[in-house]
Image (cartoon, rainbow over all chains, first blue to last red):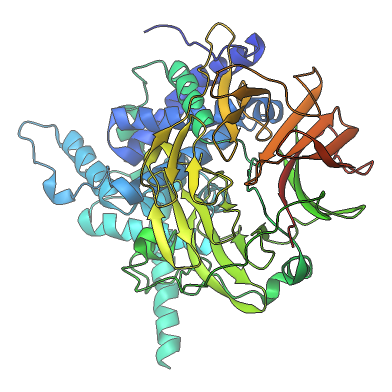
Length: 194
Length: 390
């Protein structure tokens, strides 16, 4: 692998700062991207595209320390946009083979990842933001540019699908949240009937 | 053994957390490609005869956002998600490619009136001021008075005839931009919504056609407002399509010329990037007869379509611009070529002096206008977006 080559004319200090940022944060970004895409190559493509946009805005971003938030936001938007047209990550849970000889926990990880990838991209992104990145509802909604109610609905639907597929899955505090949502929904339906 | 969703996600993500390639290097290359294809935010370009006169302008400036039709109909973008919704893909980002599935067609508006030939500097002009951080504001200059028109949640892209306008509703709940078409005195019509994208939305000089882009799929389209027809442009014109003065053809920043229906690619000569010099060369304008062209030199984000070098395409030689001459350090030029062979030349010196010249087909000075003192926002460069021919 050869070293980075900045566009001619780019000041060395800006380039150095950007490369420090990439070194420090690309692992975390790739991890999220891998959850979203299910493929290491696609994940790196996604992160690279987001970083390209970050580099173009680096002069503005590095002064305000917003580079990571900006990159993350761009990455999620690119992911959702790409999926709509290409559906590169459309993987049915039914297509995941039961691989003989796999350790049980590995098999479960594969199956859960496949189930995650089978969700619509907006639901998948909402779950990754909330339960992998531990973003608050407000922060996750801001990253996805949607109202909090929409974010909640996406998380709720995604978790319900995962739960239906894997009843043994422990959702932790999401369990309580999901139960509360169910109660709210049932109450609302009751009010409508009344 | 039951496992928590959190620990499982972290275990899965570990498999993808070590990048196998040099992402910074790839990002630089990708950024270069993006810069070629997508100019900076605010570089809404070069429509050669936009007009802001009459009821259209008045309607724009006096418009109350609350009075506009809801972006939710028919392409719901704002409503809170409800339990009954099952397919989020249809409630956000309704692409023009989905029109058929939604049984939506654009109603033809008929031909606009032909734009008048410029014989003097127009009374009304539209500008964009972009500062060093690529923040922008849209300003209208009417006589000696300038005013900022980026107000509320809509951005406006007025057509040359002053009647038609594309309104872009920004704060959709789905992260997209909702577009609608306004006619003076007629009800606004929903058009489409699309992913947020920093590509130019430009009207043809005859006000009958508009170019817009969708980042999903990376396509640019021409909507013929007069007939309701929609055309998909070739890939090389994504985010780069500029109208030629005849309203019939478009070209990209690398010299490809196509008819507005996407047919008949033709190549005009532009200079190649010089790796020794660094930076990118971008075709920023071409005359109606394809005889002369402007080149913009940039190292990355650009505040607009600039004419840094001017070429005779027949001989390949660099030539001086009429009236203002050859390149001068500290001066920024923009050229708008008109269908009759004349041109508008904008020349800005620092942050204080800016002049707009109307130059005739033979290079003679026809009229000039010094922009009012104080119109240039602090540390900004101005870009001429459009002008009234009414």
